[in-house]
Length: 287
Image 1: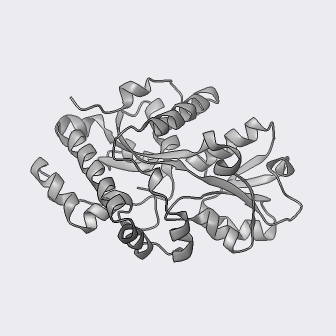
Image 2 (image 1 turned 135 degrees about the vertical axis):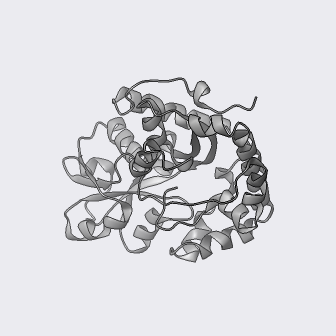
């Protein structure tokens, strides 16, 4: 998973807190769950390649890149969709993305935020320099002017985009406001080797996730409180960003499939996905 601590979040994290996660997986022979957090998708991909992970939850862009590079994975479900990302700036003269032409913009390369930024720049025919910076490392360079803009995730519960706005940086562009077709999705993938060894895991995981989403939507305030307790971000910002419509009990909601289809095409066209592949064949469909 992507994060700063080895704590499960999202509907699966909520299920884990309630004791439902291990209970659902125990009949498959799972006696323990080890959680490992990574700062960015490409780092997680390296762990998948090395065989250190069985299941991964992260953004669509690095998952697509890994699959297109030959890593044998299957997409079990979408964990979130319509994920916002945006660009903030300090200089008041920078009002739109066009004002960043020829300037440096920080972004976590290889992430869904990076894909949004590159797609937005291309859509507006803007040439800018993208500098690899994780969200946690962007405030200093933005304050000093080393970068003119910072591309950040605006997702619940990390709310990093909203946190930068709360500190006085202003929003220049966002997926929600300016480029809705560039919103991101997050996915759960597993390796073919693991799914071959545990033949019923995929269907069990999809059932568990669907039940977890149903549970959090039925007790939404308690779920938001759970996310607040596991986050260092402002509770007010987290509550404002919480949106049950970004979660679906079904594994492959149409809105998420449409977004990832556009993302894959973009990544194939710009060479980030080395070898094109069929999405339907990647999706894990219950037998």
